[in-house]
Image 1 (cartoon, rainbow, N blue to C red):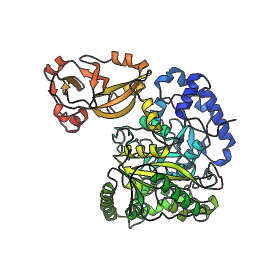
Image 2: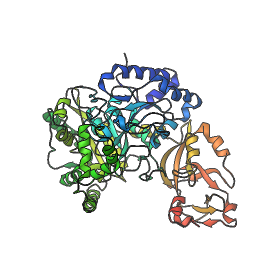
Image 3: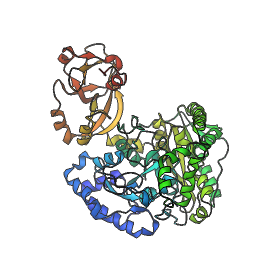
Image 4: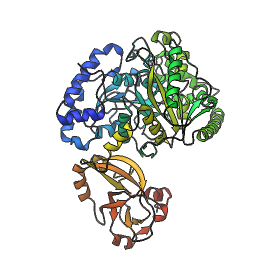
Length: 595
């Protein structure tokens, strides 16, 4: 019997390596599933074996052991660019065909993943219901009379129905979390900027995130390790390390019982009560807080001047193409042209929001906030009858997140009724993704997540090695492409033991030289990557003197292969001791490297 969903990334890789199945066979099965589900309106560009063929053929030139996503099929929300395939944002008149893929898609494909198609969405990512598309209302994966959630509707349902192992969505107000909850999935939303948004049609560019839907935290975090990282071409991108799970000191729950709505409100209330009971059994202290500040912050998104950011990006298109936009979507977008949203109102809202951010940082210090992902759901008929109010309800517990620079993960949490999933969301400050990973591990059943991710990046793996890089091979620098070309993936930021000096070598372009000291020295910031052993030899052989690969001692005492420099180079004319900056990136950021 055909499995309802695809196997996990690890299981699918194991089946490939054992010869039990092939990527071509998996793609053929996916195409058949998509055809059988055609009436569910999941796809805008559905899986097509001929269009996918170049990605399958490319796998023959890639060592499966060196590519962590070799042959893994994934879906792409159709506001994210895939080279050579139209991007519509669910508006045919808006469509364009990009020459290059979005950064996150490029990274996933470089890791061996297969893009199978472009999924349906609430037009221009404006909605949380999954019904605002001229390509049809995306139906819930389990109960087609119910909404799928949006705006990443097709991406969630594609994973839930077995059309992809994982999928990409976007999240401005909850679009990477609401569909996860309504279809029984994990929805991972990293911190703002952790995943580049270059190649994504903006909703609110300052708040947009690319997200992943998966069946497990393990799969979501494997994808996260590959997708995240600085893209210097993206003005919103920033360098944030991949999280390693740590338990928070406490869980925060709302003092007042959340409001539930819709035809299954009682079931949602009962499911939340059960979730609270389960949270109390996780062995973490629970603190009850006043949630009203988060509600006030959420109101700023659609009841304040941030709606003008959507109009700034899309207003020109609406004015030039009357009648091209879905009616309720146009109504929402046009609120951004309201004269009351002038420059002064923007700054008033920014100042108010900054106070909320300060308050949130205080509340969430070493803590994780837990809320229902949604307070209910609706039938598609109910949403059609009252599209604005029902949509507003779906964002009741999600809209605050990106405004307050929080990270979040939506997790399955039982059922509100038969075949009606209930979910919770865990929130932490943007610099503490480790806390939601640790809390999610505990919620999902112990250390399985940590074990799976650690296994995929273990230094002792017979197929890979860790590599410490401290200069031009780091993320965002010119030679990052050599790391990617060698099949390497970023693991984490780290520092050396306090036994090193760093020199700016007299080369063109300038390069750093890391020299271990017989005594003294400082800790130098660097990055740790994971590289296939099959690529490591040729990579190391190409490194020019006086640099080379040696053993680099890290701050935790571990030793890993990494870039080192012969001591004589530090004494050469023109070499500059930059140890005081503690790292190459900091030295450049200081402006000292600009002549």
